[in-house]
Amino acid sequence: MATRAFWRSKFAFFSSILLQNLKTTPIKSTPMLLKSTELELESWRSIRGLRLYHDGSPRGPLWRGKKLIGKEALFVISGLKRFEDDEEKLEKFVNARVLRLLKMDMIAVLTELERQEEVALAIKVFNVIRKQDWYKPNVYLYKDLIIALARSKKMEDVMLPWDSMKKEDLFPDSQTYTKVIRGFLNSGCPADAMNIYEDMNQSPDPPDELAFRILLKGLLPHPLLRNRVKQDFEELFPEQHVYDPPEEIFGMRG
Image (tube, rainbow, N blue to C red; front, side, top):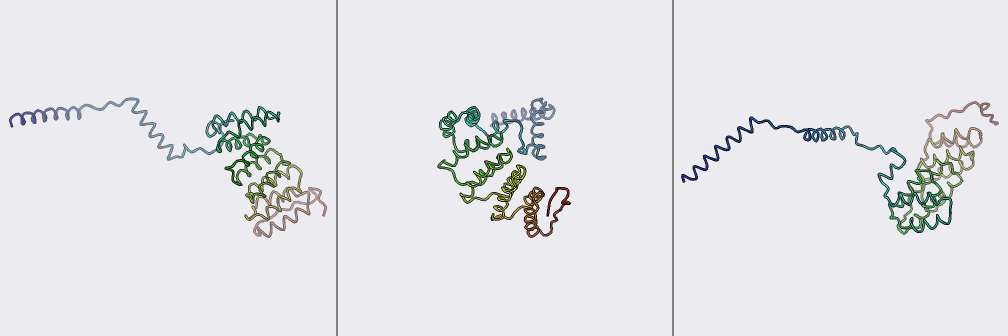
């Protein structure tokens, strides 16, 4: 009993000394601890202020390559561009490399070629994708390719994927109609623009006002076609106003 009491008193004595030291000795803050704390606070402020959110805009010529595209896909893109002017070597490279890609890598190659406006190569890769066992009709694959062709002013090639899309019972959205209509008008092909317009009217989705306004502006030198589009526009959008400039400005005849 005496021994147990002695150890208890000794333990209490050392505990009191330890507590006194803890109270009187301040904890020294190290620069590393401060930096770590500041980084955590800054990260929290960034999250609260949404500064860590990426807006999707390009950060360089190969920003997607660094973010999303693997090394094998980047190698394929480089090879396709290297053999672009040699059809025989290009076909061998497609069979040797493109067909070996996984699904997501193949789609990434297509997307990057479209972004770089390498539309001829994009069409070739797109045709390869359509032959894969895993391929299912996808309107967004068509949309990106068609918009890339229109952006590159390759309107003579637009109708190939357009017709293939219709055969797969797919309908483009309003943005695709607008881009293609504008592309044909800028290329001086109002008849082709009107064909796309007729296709838009048969779409299950309601037509977009912007597509009408682009047509109305582009068809100013063609009053008969413009009046037809104008009548449809006024029926669909009765509260909207259509500005008709003086005919003599554009040399139009009645």
